Length: 263
Image (tube, rainbow, N blue to C red; front, side):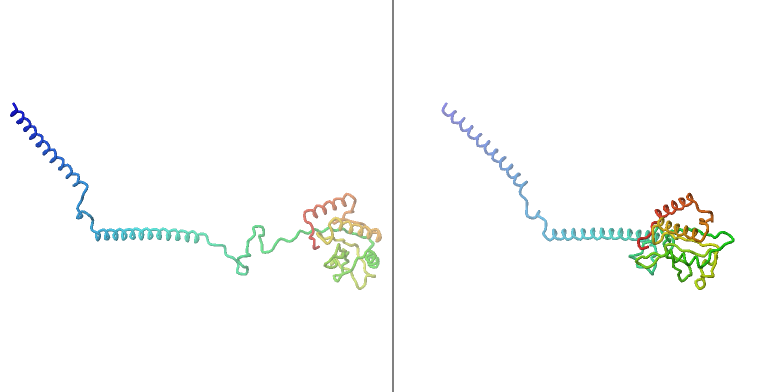
C-alpha cells in the first residue's frame, strides 16, 4: 500500500515536470518572435551617402520645376505686353500742336475755331430830319453840340463822351445822314445837311437803357431846336409806343449780354 502511494506520487511529479518543460519551451518561442518583430539589424538602415544623393536629386528636380514655372510666367507676360502694344497701335494718341506745351493743351468742345466768338453787339439808331425843302445849318448844329457837350473827334464825328478810368468813352455818336457821314470841321458855318443820325452801340460804357434815354433826350432837343422830325431806324415818326418798344428791347439785350465791368 505504501509502495503504491510512492509510485503514484512519482508519476505525478514526472507529469508535472513534463508539463512545465513544454510550457517553458512554448513561452520562450513566443518571446523570441516578439523580439524579432520589434528589433532590426543595422544593415536594414539606409546608407547616408544614398540619402544625400536623393536629397540633391530632389533639389535639382525642384529647381527645374521652378525654372519651368518662371519660363511659363515670362511667356505669359510677354504675350500680355504684345497684346497691349497692339491695342495702343490701333488707337494712336491725339497729336499735340508743337507750338503749345503738352501740359497746357486742352481742346475745347465749345470752340469750333481758333478764336473765341466775339461779344454780341447791338446798334440803336434814331434820326432827326429837316422838313423839306429845308436843311440843317452847320452853325446851328455846332452851337447845339457845344451846349450839350458833344465833341468833334479826329474822324469828324460828334461824340457824347463820358469819363472812365481808361479815359473818355463815347456814350453815343452823331453822324451826318449824307455819306460818308462826317462833318466839315473846317467850314461848319457854311455846312448844310438834310438830317442827323444818332447811333448808340451796346454794350457800352453805360448801362444800356440809361444810355438810350440820354441819347433820346438829346435827339428830342435837336429836333425841337432845329425844327426837325424825330424818326426811328426805319424813318418812321417816333411815338410813345415805339419808344417803349425800343426801351424794352434794349433792356432785354442788356440782361442777355451784360456789359463788362472794365467798360
